[in-house]
Length: 324
Image (cartoon, rainbow, N blue to C red; front, side, top):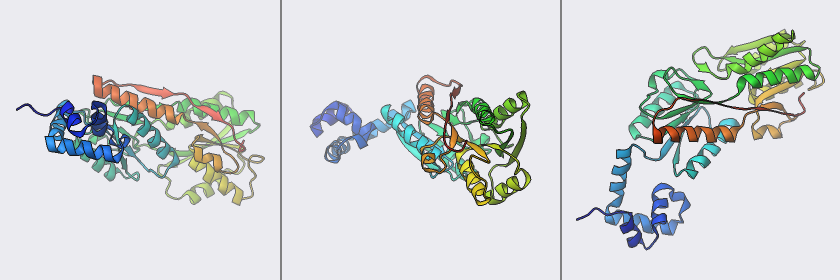
């Protein structure tokens, strides 16, 4: 007796072949009554077990895991939104893993995903978990490099830092500062924001100061209090990301420092949530949707054609607000 095929399922359920395919690959796109009919036919014919065997054999389950430090962060949640959209267009499903930035949780997810035989992983992690990254499983890293050959997708952080310094200087700020973090545990692309800033101010002989602390910042109030106590003569500040930039502006307001008259501030990210912050933040905008699309496309290339190491750098732009 021949094993049932998709045509048999379609006939039993009274639907077309395309509908059966959608139920298997993108069930959320099929109405519940139709999906139930197809699922019943699959179960009665024993076809589903054959489909599982096929996906295991090809090692493409059409499931992709996205590992994020925090789904609450507007940049990461926006990234997840676009990742899901582009995966869906390619008939892949998203598995979301929220690590809360904890290395042990990230390791747990990575080991679990290896067992579950997902097709691939897109990861945003700033922890030292290199020993748990396997070249056997397709993976795309966002904003950092692993010791093994892993494709990295990032924005042009170096150019972003240069644009920020140039903009602050051209708006009349003569004493500048960079405020952010350093991470000596990993090779993160974020460091190029500071390097780009430094390159510009040094080339133009601009008075500047670099104020950083080891990532993550444990106490934002203490961190910013110290900055303003030691460097209250700064006229322009480039801040590592929008979230920290907004906290710096709020702290400045409590000290009666006027933005942008006394202190000009530029952030980095350009997430939509920033639109509702007052004063509207001037920021270096990352091409969030384009970065998500590039991540999905790079991962699928690896899944379908084999390993290929790339460093994909996408352009940034200045998004003018009222903080400069």
